[in-house]
Image (cartoon, rainbow over all chains, first blue to last red; front, side):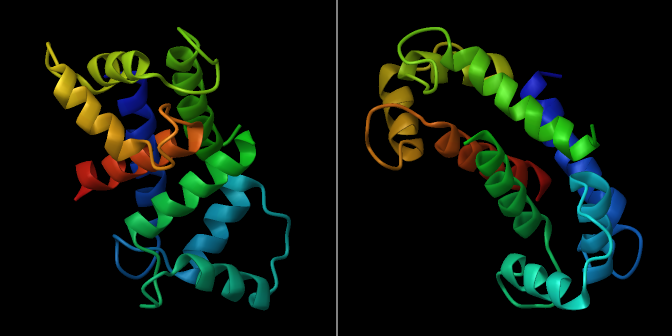
Length: 85
Length: 85
């Protein structure tokens, strides 16, 4: 498996790990997103409900109340570019 | 380093590996992109010039003749979602 395939595979594995904790297995709830942010991106404790809600709203492009894999990848892509600039 | 940070770091490392081969070190030329596609995504040989040009045009959003890191990440995000659907 090439390095790029590994990186893309890892993005999927990470998403599935958190999306599988509660609710539908293929979307992130607010709680799952907050845990992903804390664990994977070192978000400081505690994130206020308002902070998580605001952040969630930014990612939830279609407003269906959960974060799809596509919305998650869009978010990760934005952070990847931000961390590199 | 968290799994997500590793994945994002890997995306950068891969980009830098190909972007560093010719021309500016922080952008991909057509030749570098063709090599990345062949090596990382197993694109079959040979890609016709027309195929590479067409593909390149799709990625080069600002039309400056090279692929920036942001354009590359947008492309990888699209493929990641496509491979997962």
